[in-house]
Image 1: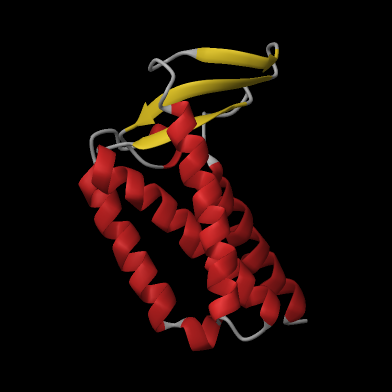
Image 2: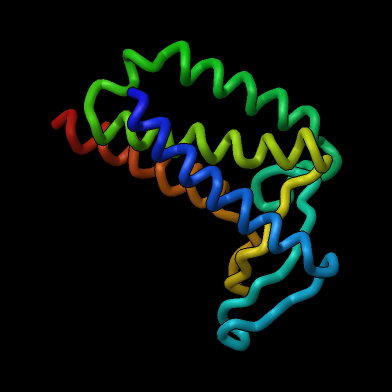
Amino acid sequence: MKKYWLYGLVLLFLDQITKFFARTMTKGQSIPIIKNIFHITYVQNRGGLFGMFQGSVMIIALLSVIMMGLLIYNWDELAKDKVSKILMIIIMTGIIGNLIDRFFLGYVTDFIDFRIWPVFNFADSYLTVSSLALVVKEISWKK
């Protein structure tokens, strides 16, 4: 299990270092990488998913801690194979990455801006993609 956590630490470092660099920008500043398609835009998200529940940072942080506890408590049942273990670590890394922001900054640093989607960060991607992959894996492998 230790090697799986090493993957998580690498991903957590990537999340935190990119957020650090985003915070060197002025709030709301946007740098076009591919004009009107992909920008780096510094946003302080004081809510949750897609910016919903603004001002609920501590409630969302508490729910995140509870979710982490449930994932750890149910580890043996949920992480039965290598793929599931990796996906679970990535999910937990996403939770931790955003919790660090919530606890130390009072908001989550978002910066990846595709203009057709709310601005997000790597931790959000870890959570979304790995959660969906875990659900698809569980559904498709049960057949």
